[in-house]
Image (tube, rainbow, N blue to C red; front, top):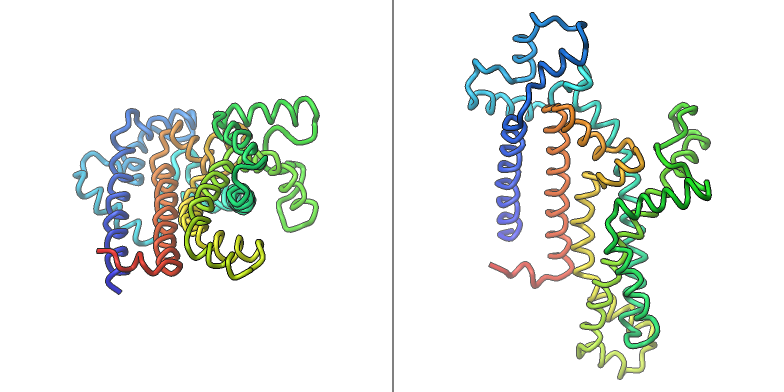
Amino acid sequence: MRFIGRRLAFYVITLWAAVTINFFIPRLMPGDPVKALIAKNQGRISTDAMDSLYALFGLDEQVPLWQQYLDYWKTLLSGDLGVSFAYFPTPVSDLINQALPWTVGLVGVATIISFVIGTLIGTGIGWRRGTWADSLLPISTFFSAVPYFWLALIAVFVFSVTLGWFPASGSYDRSLVPGWSWEFVGSVIYYGTLPALTIVISSIAGWILGMRNMVVTVSSEDYVTVAQAKGLSERAVRTGYAARNAVLPQVSSFALSLGFIVGGTLIMEMVFSYQGIGFMLFNAVNAKDYPLMQGCFLVITIAVLVANILADFVYAALDPRTRQEG
C-alpha cells in the first residue's frame, strides 16, 4: 500500500504541474487569438463583440491572472474544455472526440504490431546470437535511424505516386458516409495501411534490439542453465525461462509507449494529412487556438500519466522486488 500511495502522490503532483504549465504557456505566446478570429470571419463578427469574446475565452485582461487560473481549474473539473477559436463555436471536447479515435486506432494498432513482431524477432536473435540472425540488426537499425518524415515521404513516393498501391493522403474515401459498413471500414483500413506500415518499420528496431539484449543477458543466468541441465526442450527453455524474464523491461516500455499513442505521430499525420489529434494540435498552434491547444495537451498528458501508472503497477506485479524500494 505504501508503494501505491507514493506513486499516486507523485502522479497527482505531476498532473497539477502539467495542468499549470498547460494554462500559462499558451498565454505567453505572441499574438491575439480574438483579433485573429474576427479577421478570419471577415466581418461576420462585429468588433464590438471583442470584450465579450475575451470574457468567453477567459482572456479578459481586466481579470487578474490568478483568477483566470482558478476559473480554468473550475471549468476543467466540470469537464468543460472551452470553445475552439479556429472552429468557433464548436466545443473543444467535441473536436477531440472526433480526432482521438483516428489516432488511437491507427497508432495504437501499429504500436501493438511493432511490439509483438519486434519482441518475437528479438527473442529469436538473442537466443541464436552469433549466427546469421545477427545480420538482421543492422538492417532494422538503419530504418530506425532514418528520419521519420524521410521514410514517410519515400513510402508515399514509392507506394502511392510510383506504384499507385495506396492513397497518398487522407484517412478514408471522402465519397463514403462514415459508419460501420464494411465498405467504410475497408476504406479506413486501406487508407491507414501505409501510415501504419511506416510507423512499424521506424519503431520495430527498438523492440528487436531491446529484447535481443535482454535475452542475451538472461540466457547466462543460473536458472536457464539448470533448466537446460534438466533436459527441457530448447523451446521450453527459450520461452518459459529466458523470454519470460527478459520481457519484463519490454512490458514497461510498451506501457509507456501506449501513453504516447494519444499524442499520435505528429509528423506522420502531417505527411499523410491524417485527421488525428496530432494534426489537430498542429493546426491549433498555427491558429493560436488556446482552448484547443490546452485540450490536446491535457488529453496527451493524462494519457501519458495513466500509462506510467499502469507501467508501475504491471511491473510491480510481474517483479515483486520493485515493491521493496524506498
